[in-house]
Structures are given as C-alpha cells and as structure tokens.
Amino acid sequence: MQYTYIIPLFILLPLLALIALAFFKNKDEDAVFWTSFIAITLHSLSALLVTTDWLVNGAIPFHYEALRLYETRTSHFSINLYFDGFTVAFGSVMCLITFMVALFSRYYMHREKGYKRFFNNLLLFFLGINIIIFSGNFETLFIGWEIIGITSFFLIAYYNDRYLPVKNALKVVSYYRIADVLLLLAIWAGHHAVGKSIDFYDFKAIAAATHDSHAPGLLIWFVPVALLIVAAVKSAQLPFSSWLPRAMEGPTTSSAIFYGSLSVHMGVFLMIRTYPLWENNTEFRWLMAGMGLATTLLTTGIARVQSSVKTQIAYSSIAQIGLMFVWVALGWHWFAVIHFMANAFLRTYQLLVSPSILSYLIHDQFFNFIQPQNYIDKGLIGRIRMTLYILSIREFRLDEVMYYFLWRPLKKLGIFISYIPPFVVYFGLIPTYFIGLYFVYHKELLSNEVLGVLPYVFSIIGIIISLRAFVQRKQPIKAWVMIFLNNLFTSLTIGFNEQFDFTQIHIFLSGIMVSGLVGVLILLHMKKAVPELSLDGFFGYNRIKPVQGMIFLLASLGLMGFPITPSFVGEDLILGHVHENQYGLTVLIAANLIVDGLAVFRMYARIFLGPYRYSNHEVAFRSS
Image (cartoon, rainbow, N blue to C red; front, side, top):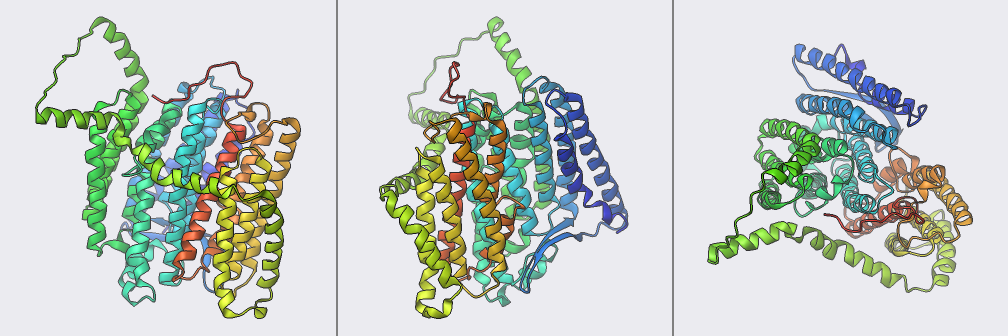
C-alpha cells in the first residue's frame, strides 16, 4: 500500500493539536479554533488521500501494527490499525460531522468561559473515535472506548458549576463503567479461547476454528453476549435507554456530535466489526434483533409525547439505532451503515437548529395559540391509549428500574459493610496484605488447596474495601486509601492464581503507587485549605482550586486504569492470568473494577465539581 505510512496520522493529528492547545488561554479563541480546525481538516484530507489510493488499488482490507507496547511469550499488547469498507464509511461521516460541529462551535461557544475546554474535549473525542474506527484489535478499540467515555463525562458536566449536569454525568459514566469492564472481560475471554490477542483481520479464521478451540463456549456465547451488552449501553438500547436524554445537559454542539450522530452509534459499529464471531449463532442473532425491535417500539412511543426537544430527538435517535441492531442481526450490514449515515446527519442538523426552532415556537405560540381539544375516549381502546401515554410520559420508569435493580442493592450492600468497625478495616487489612505478599513470593510453603482458595479470599476482601469506599461520605482521604488498598489486594489475587512473571504485577502497581500517592497529597492539601472537606454533597472546589482539581483528576484516571497508563497495561496483562474456568473469580474481579471506578469518579465529582459551596445562586435539583 503506497500510503500506508499516512495511517498513523489519523491518531497523531488530533493528539498533536490537543498538545498545542495547552499553550493557549481561554481568551485566545481564534488560536484555539484554528488549531483544532486545521488538525481536523488535515485529518480529513489524509483520510481522503488514503481512501482514494485504497479504492484504486482494489479496496483490499489491510492491517497495520503501529506500536507494540509490551510483549511476553504468550501474548503481546500492541496498537493495531485496520482499514476496510466499514472504516471508510464510518470515518467519512466522522470527519464531515466533526468538521461541521467545530465550525459551528466557533461562534456558538463564543465568549464561553469554557471555550478552550470545549475544544480540548472535542479533540479528545475526535482522537478516541478515530482509535475505535481504525482499531485493528480489541485492545486498541478499548483505548478509544475509554477515551470516549471520559470525554462524555467532561462534556455532560461542561457546566460544572451546576448540580444537574454533574449529577447526570455521574449517572452516565456509571453505565459506561459497566460497559468498559464487560469489554475488558470479552477481551479476556477471547485471549483464553484463541490463545492470543484477537486481530480483526483474523476474525473469519478464528470463527472457523472456534469448535477446535479448548474453550469454544467462550467465543460462542460469552464474548457475543458481553459485546452486545457493551453495545447496548453505548447505544442506549433497552434497558439502558434512560441515560441518553440525561446526557443532553452539555452544550448543544456536544450533544449533536456525541448523542445525536457519532458516539451513540459506536455500539452498532462494534457489532458490525465483530459479526464473524457470532454470525452462525442463530439464537444470539434473534436475541439481538429482539432487543433492537423492543427498543424501537418503546422509545418511539416515548419520543412522541416528550415536551423537551432534546429528549424527543434523543429517543427518536434511540429508536432508529434499535432498527440498525435489527439490520446487523439479519446480516444487512451495509443497509445498517446507510441507515447510520442518514440518522447521524439528521440528528446533527436537528440538534444544531433546535435552539432556533425552540425560540421561534415560543414566540409563535403567543400569536397562533390553538386551545387543545379536551377529548377522552372512555372505551377499552381509549384506556389502553391513555395507559401507554402515561407510561411514555414517564419513560416507562426505566430510570427507576435501573436504580432499583442495579444501584440500590450496591448501595445497601456498601452501607451494610460500612458497619464493620474502622479499626478492623485499617489494622486488619495492612498486616493481611503483607502476609499475603510474603506468601506470593514463597508459594512452596502453602498447599495446593490453600493456593486455590486464596485468590477468591483476596478478591472478596478487595470488593469489601471498594464497597466501603463507595459509600464513604465524611472522610475522602480514607475513601481514597481504601481504593488504593483494593488495587493492592487485586494484585495479590492474580499473584496467587498461577506462576508467572511478576514484572506484569509490577507494571500494574507502578501506576497504582504513583496515582495513589499523588491523590493522597492533593487531598491532604485540600483538607488543610478546606477543613470541612467531605463527600456529603457536591462542593465545586474546582472554582478555587483548579490546579489541584486537574492533578487529582489525572491521579484518578491512573488509579482506575485509564489508557494508556501503566496501571491500564498491567490490568490487561494480569487479567489474562485468570483461568477460563474461574467464573466466580471473574465475576468478583469485574464487580471490583466497576465499584472501584465508580468510587473514583464519585470522589472527583463531589469534591471538585458542582455548585460552589459558598455560592448565593439558586440551584436546580430536578431535571425537566
């Protein structure tokens, strides 16, 4: 391929532009815009050049290994890129919509105090979605997936001095955390089923050899179901549909590019990309089509009765994406791609013009008001219609259902665990950890039966610690230390599971140690400056301590394993040493990672985001 060397530019250009923005201030609007705009334009031209060359040379898909980060005898961790027809289709839409939104935002965001912060997030999102679309393996895709998730959090909470945007950002990122961990588990299962990292260009050969694998059940059911849940969360399919309207708290331009056009369609892209893994699984395809069809029917009804224009557009988009899942399940991939293109451009247009349309309608109703007809059909059909109307107005209580079955039990369990006396936690855990650390390096002193039990023991201890940190309200330093201890016990869990090179645990702990220490220092500094520091509400200290807020955010990302920190690389490596038949241990580690990430996000949001504690302005506590 003549222009293969241009492929890395798709990742480097947004990254370089993001670095360049660090040298500008918020008032340098022209410099901020033109830096972003030139990077997006050069990216689009590079993509056009590569696509033209690719089509002229026969449109043959090709694979490109850009960077190998770590390698062992059994596996390797590398950044791989892949270019095929679906890359061209999704990449073209991505370039055009990002180009238009960036141009529109130059004037729409003019004189906003977060002007530079908006374009920082736009470029970070552009980087993440490029990595997803051009990814050549699951590890690379996961990096982009995580970047989009954290960018969603930043943009939903763009107005971070308000209560509702921060609260809704936490709600959305809690769903994303579930999807991230399930994607990580799908990667783990794929490693065990195939015996190596899965490259997308090799999917058909892997699928053909599935029945010859030593763990065929993982590829036949576990990986597809995990990927479907991941895609359902990202694309707001049932039962996760309620988060999308709440994500519209950010600026209209971010809503257009994230939740109208690009980010929300990445679930469809994921299922198209992984189609060879499950194309022969008829039952799974019926399951996927049923989910998409049910989502379409419910969200169409919800969209038709909502009073908020953004909520109408959000649920209308969800309904169309549900149909795309049906097309993918039926194998009609290019029909789904065409549907994606049409829906993405339509929702972008609708969201960008929605403020103008809303303003026009508000003025129009004063001059052309038509009194609604007071007509109620009291028959059976009328009662059914009214029931559906009320359920649709209340969004079928999807938010309450998810809270009742998912988050409420988690909080109750954490509160129950919090009754354990503090001295038992602090004076019992540290000696236990060092005893466990000693026996990790002297396993010959323990019997095989004990060695088989210890991974479960330490993983249970870890999840107890993370749950206690999750519900901690009064003392943020203790919550942070507990999150740090949880990661130490996670390393012990893997250390007892089998014999392997401890360098992998050391990579994991190197990121954890640095992030944990930095976080403690920032919290100690904050405690000294603000003696009443706690997690009992949102305090908005980012207003008076922005530098400390940024450093604590970086420490939080390192502690939760954000790509491509040492803790992320180590997390991926050590998870590969959980055996394919250790389902209980897998569930415990997955739950641990979910709660751990939620606790970290919650700490950062409650301390540094939200309305400033000493503000005299009124705060809205309920969304429309």
